[in-house]
Length: 211
Image 1: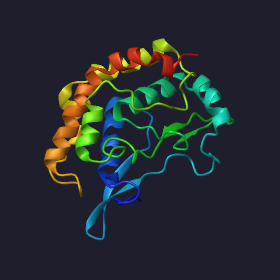
Image 2 (image 1 turned 135 degrees about the vertical axis):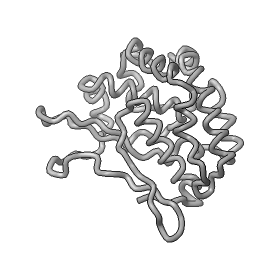
Image 3 (image 1 turned 60 degrees about the vertical axis):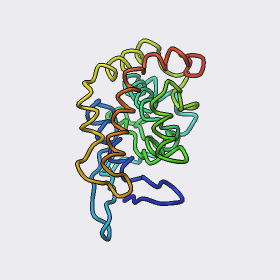
């Protein structure tokens, strides 16, 4: 269970739940989660992400390429999603079944360090997201995915109706430190960003690279 934390992620609960909503809407391989009450404040609880009978450690750096080769669509979807939400903290927050042939598991989790996290203030966060900056300078799957597959996922995200993005970001009530006005601002920032996602990719192909 995660709560807002001044030293780790001030807006953690909003970040996690909004990212979960977006992932579900965009069909990104992400662990589901729910809002729950924690001593009078909202918290975020991640749901089970894999069969407990199967040992599934976080991906090691030496396994990134292998995971992208086994799950090319999922890896590309995740890169597009992380660029959309400004998540530069993917390493260590991903599980995939690589050595059990009968199991196909690829799931991301932990988005506390995205959306309203990486910058000093909410104003700075919105300004960064509402731009054509890459934000995600490093990612486990940079250099491991094909341009065409990533391009297809970015176009799919860009074609998502604006109202669906708004529904993912706006809750009709404050989420701890994130009031309704701030939720609306996040929605419009992500609408801008998804509409410019292909441009962001074009500008930064030298960083993203292709296999």
